[in-house]
Image (cartoon, rainbow, N blue to C red; front, top):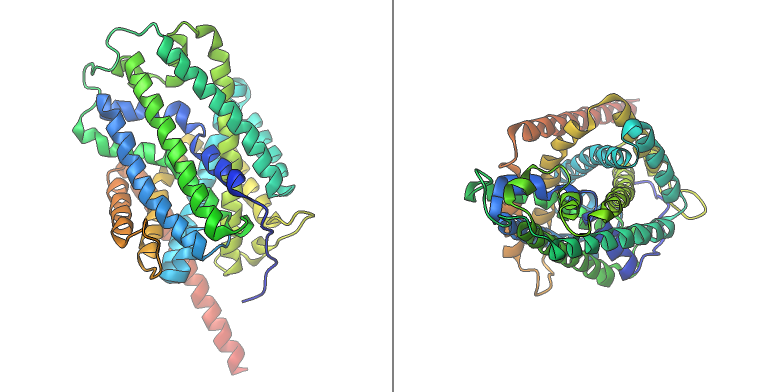
Length: 423
C-alpha cells in the first residue's frame, strides 16, 4: 500500500471528550424526547436507559479497538483488521453515506432555527464555514466545539431550571390517551440511541489523539457518561413538567417546557442553544466523515485523491472538501429530513461490526469482557430490526449498491492486473 502522510496527534482528554459530548448533545437533544415519548409514553426513562446500555456496550468496544488501532477511520479500520475487508467496507460505507445525510439534516436544522425563510442558503453557508474551520486544523475544530458545547450546556441548564420552577401543568408524568406502552420501548430506545452515537467521532479521530491507549477510552466513556446523565435528567424533568401527550406532540419539547414555565421570556435563548447544538454536531460530523473517507481512500475503497493530507496543520483536505460538496448537493437536490431516516439502519450496522470486531480481540481489560461485546452486537441488531421498514429497506438498498460497486471495482482491478502480467 502506498505510504500516506499521517495526521498529527494534538488532542488530549479534554478536547476529545468535548468533541464526543458535543456530538451527543447536538440538535437531537432538542427534538428526540418528543418522538421517543410518543412511542414509550411514561416509560421514556426506561427507553433512555436501554439506549444508554446499548451505547455503553458499543462505547467499550470502540474504546478497545481505538486503543489498539489509533488510526483515522474508526470501525472501517477495525473491521478490516479484525474481520476482513468486506465487513470493514460495510461499516465504512454505512458511516460515510448515512452520516453525510445526517450532516445535511443538521445543517438544515440550523438554517430553520436561524432563518426559517432562507433555511437552505443558511445551511449551505454553515457547511462552508465549518469546513473552513476544519481545514485550519483539528485544534481549531476542538476549540470551536468547546465554545458551542458551553452554549448548549448553559441552555440545557436553563431548560432544567424552567422545568423545576414550573408552574407544572396538570397531568405531568401521566399517560394521556395512547401515549406509549411496553411495545414502544424498543423503537423509542432506537431513536434515543442515535443521540448517543457521537462518541464514534472520537474513534474516527484516533490518528490525532495523544497517547491514544489512555486518552481514547477515557474520552469515549467520559463523554457517554456525561450525555447519559443529561438525557436521563432532562427526561425526568420533562415528564414531571409536561403531560406525556403534550411532550409527545411537541415539535420542540425543550422550548415547550420553557414556554410553559415562569421563565417563558427566555424562550429565544433555547432557540439560540438549539442552533449552537446543530452547529456543534455538524462540525463533529463533517470531521468524522472526512476522516473515514480518507481512511477508505487509503485502502482504495474510495477514490485515491481523497487520501491526500495537506495544509499548514495537516488535515484530509480533499476528503473534507468532497464531504462538503456532497452535503451541499443533498441540500439542493433532496428532501434531507426524509433521506436522513435511512441512516439509522446504517449506523446500527456500523456498531454491530464494531462489537463483532471487539469480540475477536484477545488482549482485553477487565471492564471489557467478551459477553459485553456479544450483548452490544445483539442490541444493535435488535434495535435495527425494530426500526420502521422504510428506513431499513432504504439503507439496505444503499448498502447493496456500495457492496456491488466494490465487487465490480475489484473484478476490474483483477482483470487489469492479469492483462498487465500477460504483456
